[in-house]
Length: 261
Image (cartoon, rainbow, N blue to C red; front, side):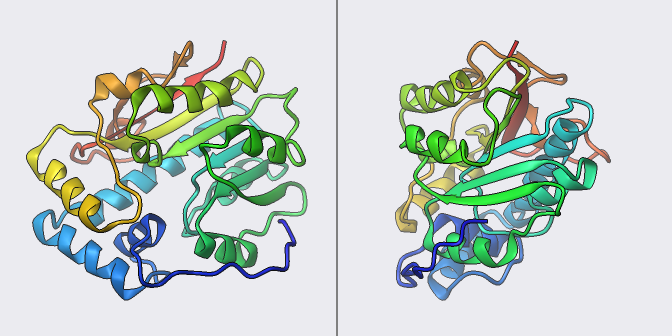
């Protein structure tokens, strides 16, 4: 982990995406303003807390696949959010202890918690980078201090590209990251979809209060975020349908994994 000493300033008066998501997942790293937005959303869509957990389960299964069947040993988790159970490094290193993980986020509370909690197994490495995904050059340059860009890397965008309204901008961010890694690298992502009125309304409530608006996309638009990649079976699907451990209902959160040829 990075050892910077300066303590970031955490603004507790404005709702933040990572903290709202932490609240929905049952975490404690949130404030009253975050819980107020979460409660307002849950009032109209009470299943959202369960959906948050199901989305996290996809994250875990995707990382387990990447570290296992795909043989990836390096992970770049962009927009990682607050540490919770089964973080990327914990899942990857439980499969391959030598795995190296770089987390990227720009939320001060995430930085504080990551420094304290994201500790690597001795065989591998874990590092946190404070950066904005829109500044992909900075992200990639900083990650090179921990990851070997001559070897395959799994790039994760889990639930964060919805904060990018313009499809072209989102595609450019993904393409910039994919272009920097070699053949055999992978992209794993998931985001909210606009398939039901309830989810569209939840996004509207979120956007009225949260500091970072969230923009739903159709599955067809999400598919365009895998430029030149080979989608791993079963493709881009509701996250609950991606190699599930048990059979559960579909939710309006789609995800997939693609491999760079």
